[in-house]
Length: 545
Image (cartoon, rainbow, N blue to C red; front, side, top):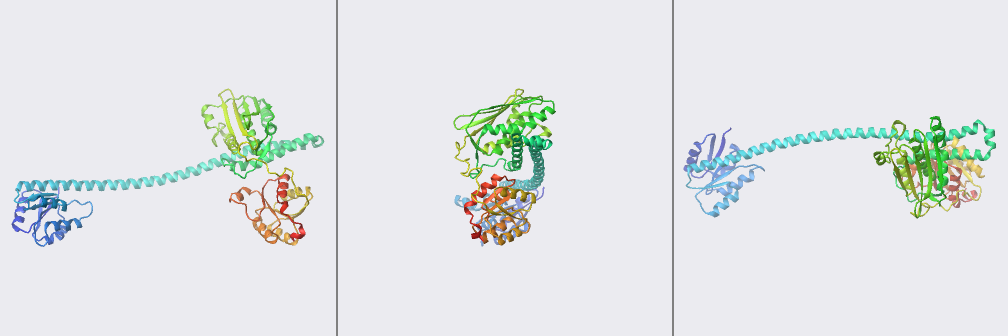
């Protein structure tokens, strides 16, 4: 082990010599000494002692002042033991010395053996302190290294998690795309199938007006449902907004429409696969519910599709409507299929959970559940493995539960009470032709433009009762056009007709310049209601000029 250094401080040279002689009897110790207490601080910095033997009564600086100066220079955590040797044996002096920083106290005259033992004990304590400091340094370095390793591992974990999240998003996007394609293909099957029936034998079909009308109504319903698929997926899990309007709906009729619309799945496709699916209707007359017809019809359709998929060898599907207590009604879709395990029942409402492998996206029931909750309803599943499944959807009566869901006072076929002169700005020729036909059907005069600048020029050159514009236009956006129209004729209402309605409304407020926002695709009644809504704001064209 290395030698320990002992610094002796005493104003009497004889005492210094005596102490040096005593310590010389010890191995691995060397001494330094001074009789001038003023040199102690400088000498301590030079020789870096492991122990100081200090007299108290000295000229210039007594031992108390020396200890104060030494402690002031010591770095935090340093342990430098001091053994006080003094002829003052009073308890007051002893207490003061210990309070000033002395670690031990020895009175003169002293025994040589006791001096050696006390020195050994104090130096052993210092060795332990130094060893502890070294160990702490090792531990601190280990902690620092471990912290660096953990930070590096955490960074790698975050990077891995980010990659996994991105992969999960891509997987979810693929599954959602599959779900969208699945739903759209079902709707397209209906639309293509019924239009094909009309075209294959158009003379016979068109002569049977009730049949032709039924086919066209079915095609229109499927087209409306198709337009709602993306919006419903985008809005999955959102809360119903207070301003959202629900219409009074006849639930038995809506269930029957869904059954007819899904015939290609449960009759034609099933028979082609060698299965026989029997759909039974047990539809009791019920009071109206308040809701979105496209969304609720999609719920029924998804439940029917699930029921059909659960009967690989054929079976029965029963569609039932009934009262469900005070202020509520319900519809049920029951099948005689394979049923569900407890695990499947627990997870079947989770987005992307499916038991259909590649043929399903796991979105049907989760989307249906989201729609039902937005209608303030409940969806319950009762299933037993090998004994079929019954899905019950409970809905409040119109106006019964929340005070919302009432249709606006405007009737479905409401329209302005006079013919209007309308500026139609739309860059898609087919959409422009269709909307123009809607307007001309009600005897309105239509002036068309294909971009914002052309629309503004035509507005300035004529007098108009109403403007209808798309949002994304070349040269000048629909929002800029609406602002320019309002600047020239503040009383002329402007209707925004766009496929980006949800994006526009996500801003939290209706953009300035538009009186009404309509979503594409649009039906004549949608446009009529919007025009009737703003009709009170219109002024005769001459006044608007």
